[in-house]
Amino acid sequence: MTLYLAMNNIANVALLFMLIIFTFSVAGMTLFGDIDVGRYGAINYENLNFKTFYMSSTLLIRSATGESWNVIMHDCAYEKGVIANIYWMVF
Image (cartoon, rainbow, N blue to C red; front, side, top):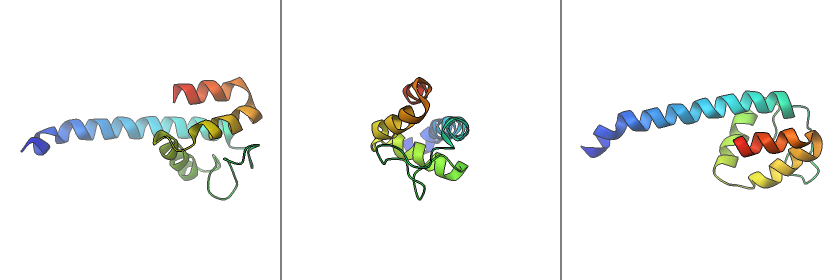
């Protein structure tokens, strides 16, 4: 019964999370879409990049779980400068 009563709140949190991922995915594609291979190897052309919306959103979901987000941030910062640090700290 408690889970049923909490479903509305759970749906609101899930929608907010999807909105944040969508917004930062589009911003990441604009800012970092031209990075082919990062200096530290976290961003690569095969499976971890900002080239497409799908890849960008999976990268951000992976980063939201805490999986080596700082190395990805350093790859972006090496290519784009301080704007990458601001992007990742806000995210």
